[in-house]
Length: 234
Image 1 (cartoon, rainbow, N blue to C red):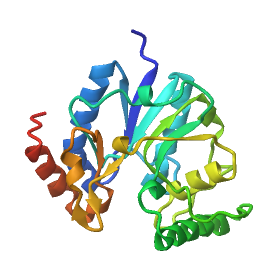
Image 2: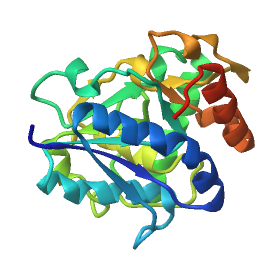
Image 3: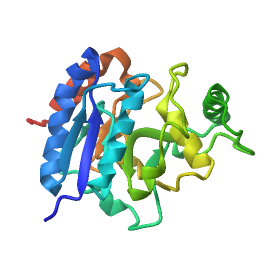
Image 4: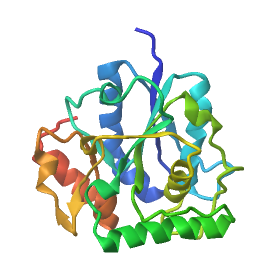
């Protein structure tokens, strides 16, 4: 079978390199299961910071039909299904999970709205009308189609002044109508924590990509403990 899909991640910085030793083997296994290629970005290049380096996967769309991007704090469970099979065949540029599927009370919506507006003001882009904080895309797991080629940092400038950086730029590109978004099922970007407590659903066979974004400085130990508990010997 021709390889027309590549799974990519960014691994920059000492702490990231430490916990990625646990996660990257799960990416390689996943790629072998579906005959995907694997690509790791380990240099910042001409970007402001590591968060923005994920945009270096965009030129790979000249070689591959689809790019699957995942943050290096995502653990792919054994026997996870092909993420592409959960998506429509056409008419979208990016697939991603919206945090407002779960986190949608007024406090969260106000926070998401503030983050996107801070990005807009920082880089001087046209304001959004009637955005109430939903949807708010999590950029930890993305599937990019050919339509994503048009996305670039000239149109959506990089900035290092915000707590969540590239994610706000991506949200603006979607909310402004520049990119056509299709929702990704939560099981492909399932958060490890809920209100600072372990989310027990991560052990269910109904969840596949486990995202340890809220584990903070404890990511390595949390991922290691998870790996042991699910008896993954990879």
